[in-house]
View 1 (cartoon, rainbow, N blue to C red):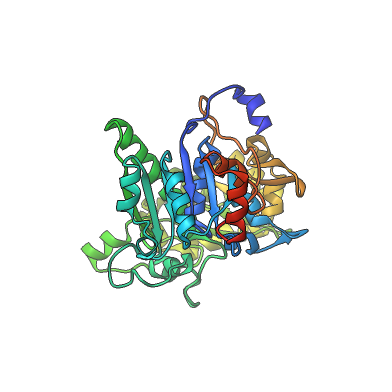
View 2 (view 1 turned 120 degrees about the horizontal axis):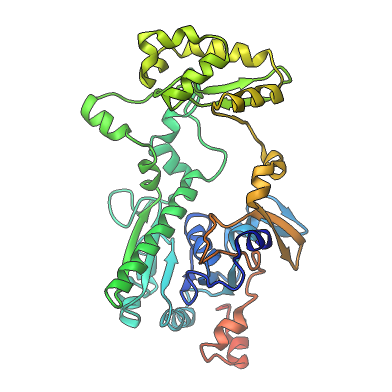
Length: 408
């Protein structure tokens, strides 16, 4: 974040969520991402993990020298604490932790907290101002509520997979945690709404029921209302759009890929002038995005043939001069090297005691008065046990006893 501080004068400015205490008892992606976003903007986040099993993210994906790299990114800015919530002594410690907490995030199956005598009713009896985020695959009620839920299932059930892929190919799932990511960002937003509500009402917590299958449905756009009113279903169209054309990926003479978008009518007209076919602009069907999409074969041929005869740099320069919309198809190395991402410090550097200097995604956005910051990457399990539990009045002898019993 140093680059941003230098450029935008962030030095010595207060974090927006300073003083907000968050208990992150969730695992994997959606719930923890909510806490990551809050921690990036100043919340005091305490990450709870089972003393032996830990969060599966620790072992998810690639690692270096025994340190999970996903964990380093997902658990940044969080104090690492181990606590067995299925143990009665562990439950008592959680009650102490939430007495002055603002937010509690969990993603256990419905009924699990109740079985551990940690129901929302009990937590609110101890702290009426607490905001409880309950994240599950299918929600707290309904015929599927007891099923295990993962982002992949949400991507399948939301309609996303059904419209993704080539027309003659199978439904396609994303190669990353799309539904979890969407739910995580939506959940962070829900928590902030609840905090604002509590502020307006001078203290009143609430329970948030977030199902992974729902936020991604919202991002499916107008499909539900179109089906409701017209009875039609969106089909798979590959990289094309049903709403405009030309819109696709195209290969240059030097074997690089580009994406072109013509969502605006003026941009579509500029593209056709650029590729040498201004005559189509006078066709009646060219006047609207949907009707242009019905002639995608013709328009794709014009654009694709023109791009195929030119090298990448020549195409990009020509599109920029024509004020038409084009972008390269990047892999992660390209993101690292792109001057725009570098200017924004989108991939920033963090000092880590385990791995030295590491690079990861920066905070989500730049705020002039209440900036976010990455203070540290994900820590080893239980690193902050003594600091957090000592603040609850637990002395060294009791910490030793709790460790021996597998509570922490």
